[in-house]
Image 1 (spheres, helix red, strand yellow):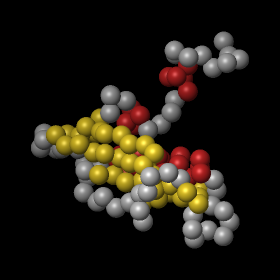
Image 2: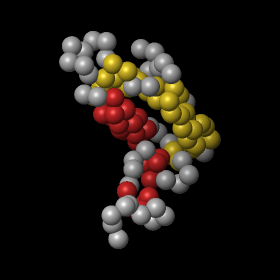
Image 3: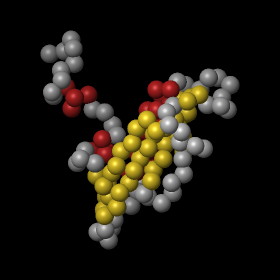
Image 4: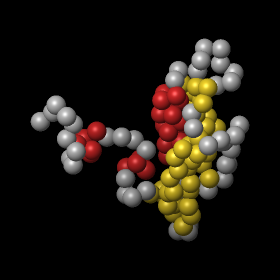
Length: 113
């Protein structure tokens, strides 16, 4: 599978068990219709570079947003299973989850107090 057009990329700092530093790059391709689906499903390719296996994988969904969200989730799970310590700006789960409470600290959600 090809990654295609890259729509998002993140560089993550890693520290191996021996203390050496390394970089991990995650890339997300643009969601696209799944060519094997007869139901109009979508796929979103992703790749992790710097942890060994650099194969392009994909997540699948009923529409482009679901495919993208599941692709981010799949990458988060793969990174959590890796050896060593990974960090991105000190964010829990490398900033790959969205916590609405964090964003409302500086930007209140309309209609809430």
